[in-house]
Amino acid sequence: MNLLPVIFEEVRNLSEQGGWVFWSLIALAFGICFALVSLWHAMQFPGAPILKPKEWIRLLRGKSGDEDLLGRLKSEIGDDGAAQGNLEEIEKNLFSKPERRFPFAFVMIGVAPLIGLLGTVTGMCTTFNGMSSSSGNAPIDVISQGISEALITTQTGLVIGVPTFIACSLLKSRHDHLVLAFRKLEARLMQHRAA
Image 1 (tube, helix red, strand yellow):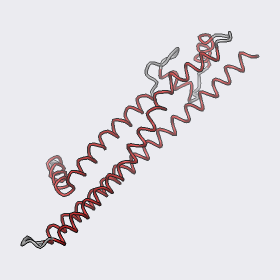
Image 2: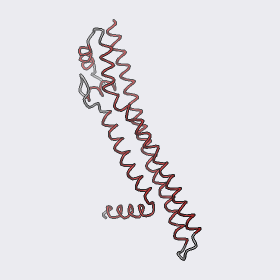
Image 3: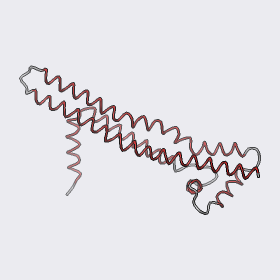
Image 4: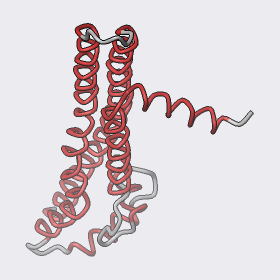
């Protein structure tokens, strides 16, 4: 059984019933996906200084055998007065991009249910217009179309917003854990330097 035609037919029906609000939610969903993928990519430390990205992740996660990596890092940052500044520059290089992107991603995710609510309002307006029309057309068709629009857009906004909020929260938690691990590593290096 080929599911692709069934999916396209269902999307066509939803777009007819959901109206322009449904399509704005679909566009927002693609934007949110792009934001989450770019966040995940930024947390892989592309262009990381001194160590390779996978070595940074291994070091920050405290995997076994990180003494060699720690030794390389100590020799690169130096023992002079610039070590603290070097560590701050490394932290900025590793974590500044995700820190700038998280608020934007959370705002986009928070907008999805609100746009769904906008669809509810437009659907109810269509419903009330159908109730008040005195034309020869069957008002029940207009009323059912308005109710359908209201329900579809609300559901779509929640279906987009809830899972992406969970995914973004998990990414944020991982990011915060890596930042905390870097700060512990920084304290360890500075303690070693002072000894």
